[in-house]
Length: 136
Length: 399
Image (cartoon, rainbow over all chains, first blue to last red; front, side):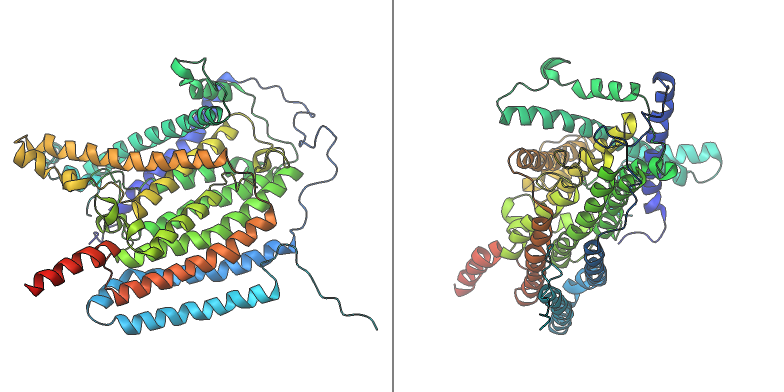
């Protein structure tokens, strides 16, 4: 078993510090070496050589919203199933595999019915086709 | 703390002598400081080696692509052009640092940091060998999935903060692609966690052995499919072709890093190449036996007992063999990633979403249920054991 101290998390903090040092250090060293003569043309956004029209911060396409909603469902599913998956072997070894397996499958089936619902609604199609009711 | 770099070192007498010497010098227990020092030096070496591999990755990419297209590739700087990445680095650092005046400057500087942070932090749990592993967290794989999502945040932030239309499109695509493909990747990893019975990389690798039939890829049919689901998903998560939609150079100029110049751009490139190494390393650790060497040569018992070498040398030869095993598997996968990039054309956005949600995710879910069934019904024995060992056992029992 791993220790109960937090010393196992020490390398992570050290590595993250290295990432910060790498970026800050390289930019500081570069500041001595690189030229610095900005002008308005250089600092404008690239738009194929034309002058940029308006700002780029537009609204998101609604498809991304649907994708992120489906993602959240599955991510929570993954997060909830990790502990179950980690202890499944122990439960199977003491003969309690059947109830754990049954609840595992039940949980996946509930989520998979969500997949089928999204599939039927056409949310997985990038180009979604709507059936427009005729006006007659 | 098991099978980390500190517990590997502390089995040697010299290390313990050094700790007690430092303790008597400081007048208090110095093991905490020595642990910090070892972690610091280990992290320093790993970061430098990985940055070197990231740099050599750009060289390998150009050389292999040249090979596939019957060109020469870089051949001027150093023998066979192998120092090309250093020349590129020098060029990058000499370039003017331009931040677009219309951009969100704080976010613009934060984005490369997040991308690099997400990659470097994953190296804490990558199992290079049984001794060279910075930290064997009990939530290892879970931590890795979580922390590598930071790269996605970096990609989106870069696209958003640049205030350029190309960057914005690339960033939006990148965000949706990375979160979509995280689902099949997570589910494939989950099925391996289920078979190994633990989330730490030590548990996952120790559940396998040196020979291919003892690896998780050949454990059962579900893990065999799971490996390919993981690999495709991992390719998409690292924004590599055929899934390089966020930077699609022929339609979006350069995608999310269109506005980045000099070192800031270099950090994105470095993060990408190091992340390819990370996902290949995870694939090797989870599916291809990780650092395991055939005949248990890795623990050094053979060298100390049969060849009568000193314990220190014998154990370290074992470690070197394990490192070689891990790096060979990972670099073969790295080659395959580059090979795929220069062979397959890019997918369209709708094809990308269809592949993820209509094919990979249901297949990964099916694999997960299949592995759970295998665990429950066959008590987690591998296909090889079921086919050959159980028959031998039955024949032995018949006598």
